[in-house]
Length: 335
Ligand SMILES: Cc1cc2nc3c(=O)[nH]c(=O)nc-3n(C[C@H](O)[C@H](O)[C@H](O)COP(=O)(O)OP(=O)(O)OC[C@H]3O[C@@H](n4cnc5c(N)ncnc54)[C@H](O)[C@@H]3O)c2cc1C
Image (cartoon, rainbow, N blue to C red; front, side, top):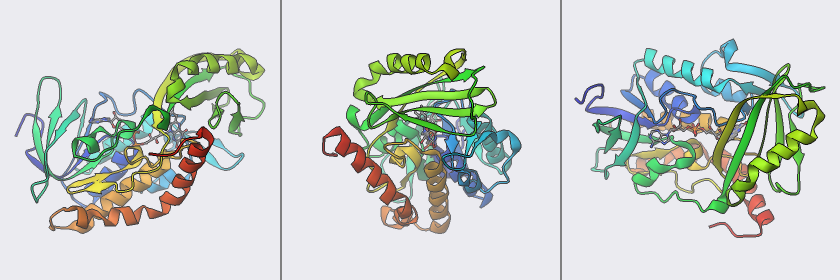
């Protein structure tokens, strides 16, 4: 055993965002030997999200929500919660550890070996160390990078025009008239995306926008202009800048392979127009855990992991429709 790493586990979860953590929580509760690695040194940091989601997302983790996990509640245009993702992910990581899971932040998956009938050997990078861990199943939960599934042989590359570039500020000392409303403001320069204002406290908001990644260079100027034009935001102080990419493409048709399940945004389970992905991540993480549990001692072949696709089938129609709408607006065909 390399220092700090086991030689083998039942499931190696690559990525400790909502998808990976949802999977790990469930698997650890069932007594599986689970290793969760994340490239980030601290779970939840840096934040790359607007943090707004449907209340059902919290229920999906199968835990009684703690008060600190929600920053704010939104009532219009429909009920949503604004999470404190750094805190939520930190706490979920601790619960995984309490349930017996091994959690290794600051650790990147750098290679995924071929399926040998019983699992895969994964090479990790942690500082100068390159430990190898054998896993019956690898759960690729690495978000927009989707590099883990690619290392395992799936083609997850996306062209720039099927990625959205997002930029947001967390503003404090804003003076919004209605802090219970999520504002989507349509702008021709952003079409089919929009400018968002997500209140996250009595005088606090996440304000941001998305553009096609081809026009990512334009995001900062567009956001500055929007903030300047809105009187309620003008005096706001910037506490954080939030940058990130998100897939704006249909979900992976086959989000599994021998010894591999792809969950959350790595499987493009994200709305291509609104970029809502937290809930889809949690739902798919739980579904992947269930399929691993039901596998028992059987060989984790693609055929035996295929029930995962059926378990998340209900997510597909809406996500495919959003991706098609986006493709139509952009006047191009999906790959
Ligand atoms: C700016 C922005 C705003 C957004 N706002 C919202 C919103 O308000 N509401 C909403 O529902 N969705 C939002 N989204 C989308 C949402 O953030 C994602 O859909 C969600 O985080 C997906 O969760 P996940 O667990 O699949 O992946 P992630 O949360 O992206 O987690 C993936 C993890 O994998 C790790 N990782 C990556 N590569 C490796 C590797 N090789 N080895 C190990 N670890 C690795 C990363 O460090 C990361 O911690 C937003 C996205 C962006 C970019």
